Image (cartoon, rainbow, N blue to C red):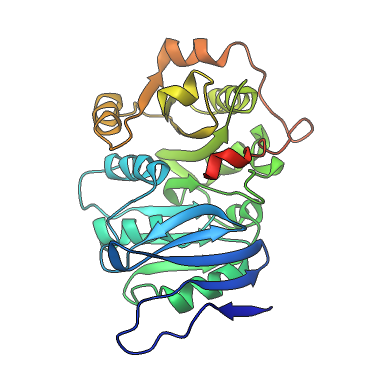
Length: 290
């Protein structure tokens, strides 16, 4: 695979962007001017994640903060968790779990082996963290997780800025349920814009597999005013709605939490998605990354 660096980093020199062709396109690790060793990962120009090795508990992207809230509320503070990450990116959330919940055991499934190698080289993991990375398709990697192993399954998988179709279906969620321990939590980063058909279908699909659901998103996204991210949370035990609502409202870009009857009404009679009917999530407009 081809590789280029905008400039070599000498002693005392400012950090430069590292660019490398990986399986998913052109990956760039762009320096953060406010944080000396922090980097933003872009794939073909689309921002994917942000990492600060000096402060792995810092979550810069709004959707990552919302997933961070789910992690924080999944168990008492500091308690170790067994976590499966579908989609790795720059391993931001795996680093977050390791920093906030020491002794956690984590499996990361990231199909793009070239991206994994780039991230490991430029943003090495703490060697003491119990993080195993598998370079497999997300659903194939999920199938290798033992029954009932995971306390938490986090899905953040995008290919060409779209969630692949085979990660949107009832059959996929059956695999998630199989891997989750009783009372375990599933959370997925979804992306959609008006008329929100994809998001409504994903809620309907999850409603058939989890007794409790919540959706965390920017109110403008929920009103169909703009394209954006939404975090869907599912479990068979009651979700910490009040705490999640308080945390989401207090973020720099505040979000709303929908659940219960309001969430069912939002779904609007959408049909669950199956492997036979699944399609990839819609491509974001060019303006989404400006």
